[in-house]
Length: 170
Length: 170
Picture (tube, each protein chain N blue to C red):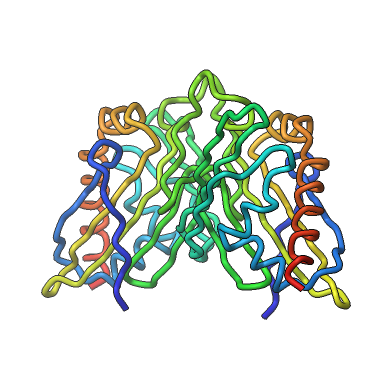
């Protein structure tokens, strides 16, 4: 089966594109099992303190992050596409069962107000994986804000954590 | 196959639930073919002047409505679930390929700023169809605004138009 190509819009999208030395089946497990995801999903010293994943189109993708000071940031999103070991698409713009998110409260932190869709694509590359996280936004302001928040460092650090974690399985 | 049940939240959802005397296969055709949809989708004297439907999860659901004064209101949404003759789910909260909508411009009309997800369900009832349009919102304010804009009259009138139109096919 050929994976559908999602076109990258350089003005609206941020992309983490890297080849990693672990097989895609392990990456998939780390991304789709809540207990595993909690181990790597937030850049330390942040933690992921709770997670729920209902792995189907329309299912919940819920994470709760905790800052080093102990403040919690829960976020519920919606899964859109599931192709085991190859593709996971989810969005923070919808709640489970495709309900639109309510507008962010006035006092929300920047990161809570961020609406994005993540297209994760995993392709076998030798003994490793070509890993692409394509993150789409709705306008240039949100894209720039996400980049400024440290998208590349943040998602990159988390991917390092994922790789290190799944290597402990061997 | 059993259709998944989407739970109605009475505070956040608006529902048009009616039995109509045309078969679901014709209703489906009227909803999913742009040329047919244009005939009934806007309550007269409003018109639907353009429409594009890419009938797949992630595909475009685009309509352009025109007021009696000639003002045009284009709107692009995203299709989420397609079960031929039985269920169509689409949302105005996402653009095609699941990209989040940008925030509505400050000067947008109320209806353009409305984020909702429509779960259309068609079940055979005798020689007709049990027709349910379940429209989900993200917060109470938007639900009330949609109701006040005339949800029940508007969607009801359009359904009357749909039924009258498909009867001309016989």
